Picture: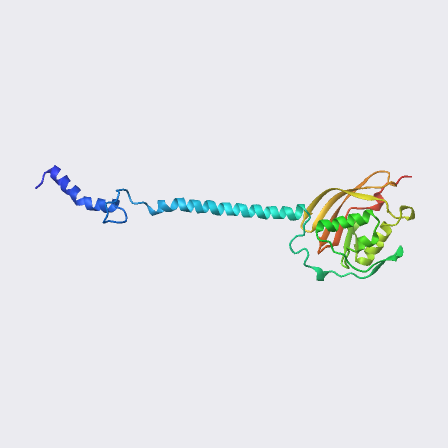
Length: 234
């Protein structure tokens, strides 16, 4: 019977092949450098971490691009997706300015962006251009005013704005100038705070409008304008 020292030597000799197999590399016929076999889970961890970082980066870039596009559409008054695809929804009957039968509006003129629609509206309004206003309003146009008043359709709009663009001494408001003070844009809708001035007004008059545009047209408006609140010079 071997003594304690001999027993340990025998056991160590018997375990040596197993230890070599556990520590040897992929080619057992070679004198490979002895090192512990890599844990597959540990080997995959850095790769998975890199992939997660890449996915996170792509997601952040995508979100940033979408946000930038939304700001571009809104802040610059660019046409929003689908905004110019509704041409078949809007028609325009021929209408006459009841205060000047020589003025006739027979069709619609479309603008390229919501911002351009508003610019044309303000230009025509400040310039007392009845035809320039009416070229934007389809048959379905509606204007909502204080007190629940709704001006609906081209004929009603023709009469309303026909009175508005008349000379002041004839009972109209031609000569008043609306100046934008601030705005908020949501899709094809532009909400504007404005101030109105005129030589015949005793003081500036402030209000706000929401301009709902679609397919290059002014399809609806909501306004705080109330002519009874204007203060005229004596």
